[in-house]
Amino acid sequence: MRIARPGELGEREIEAWRGLRAKSGAPANPFMEPEFTLAVGAVRPRSRVAVWWEDGEPVGFFPYEKGPLGRGRAIGFGVSDSQGGIFRPGLRPGTQALLRACGLVFWEYDNLETGQPVFEGAADESFASPVIDVGEGYPAYEALLRVQSPKFLRTTLAKDRRLARQADGEVRFVFDERDPAALRTLMEWKSAQYRRTGRGDRFAQDWISTLVRRLHAQRAPGCSGVLSVLYVGDRPVAAHFGLRSETVLSCWFPAYDPEFAKYSPGLILHLRMAAGAAEAGIGTLDLGRGAAEYKDALKTGELTVYEGAVTRPDPRTALHWLRREPVRAAHAYVRARPALAARARAALNTVAALRGDR
Image 1: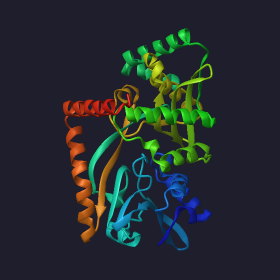
Image 2 (image 1 turned 45 degrees about the horizontal axis):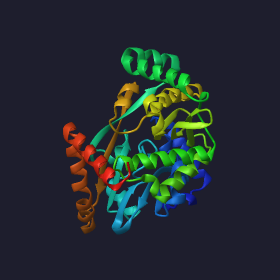
Image 3 (image 1 turned 180 degrees about the vertical axis):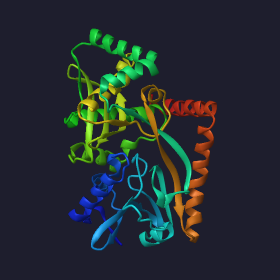
Image 4 (image 1 turned 45 degrees about the vertical axis):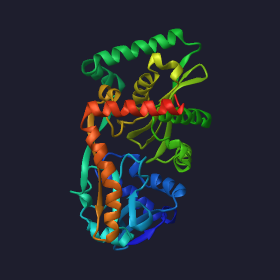
């Protein structure tokens, strides 16, 4: 096994990584492709990849970020929606040996994909990741919504028509917008939304904003940035940036112009994204971990992702555990109590208002 920075991976290793993912039987989530790790490696200097070789062939990859005092995290932790190792069937390195070889005493993940036997039993919690299946085409999906979420579909389509009637300009949709100005607009909306709801602004972190711009420009079969925009004339009113493989669109950063809120442009955008994805040959839209009413209305099924950490005996392990566990436990306690979660959201909004962010 060797440890390398992502940019040090050879073409043979990258092709082997792609091949292992293609043969894995797992959904072709773009976050699990080498191109995502390469992009994170370009903006996160502590990114590393452990590579296993057998009989002159690369047979396993474990991407991670190495922090101080032996603390490790999944690559792109905090923004990556699918995490784990990429291993040949039957290759199952022990977690203790893996951590030791990587110089880690603690490895943390928050979106571990299903089917990661190396880390079985280490998860603290599991979460639903709703998905939309458009493999049979958009008309079949809309027909399902008419049965499954009739009020949602009827209301959203009515708002779409009302926007078209009342808008000052043609309503149009671009599934894969390449204009960087549209991406800047989306990031500004999303930053304002984070502040408005009292949450930390992800785009205030240079590495995240740089990563998103980098991925927007990236074109690779397994991991390409896709910016979808709903326009009124030349004015964007809703947008979403995500990553796609040949068969999966991983939804990531949606936002809209609050001036158009009465039309629910974000919901209109998601329906048009589903149609655009189906037309582009994509069979699945992964809406990502987290409960939301719009996800419940749109979804056709769910995947499962996991949050947790693996450790090895070391005095530093207790330090990392003590830093992580109280926060994780507090979040879990609030999530399990909807009324308390609602009050917590209200408190965040109040804090944002007092700061003048609303």
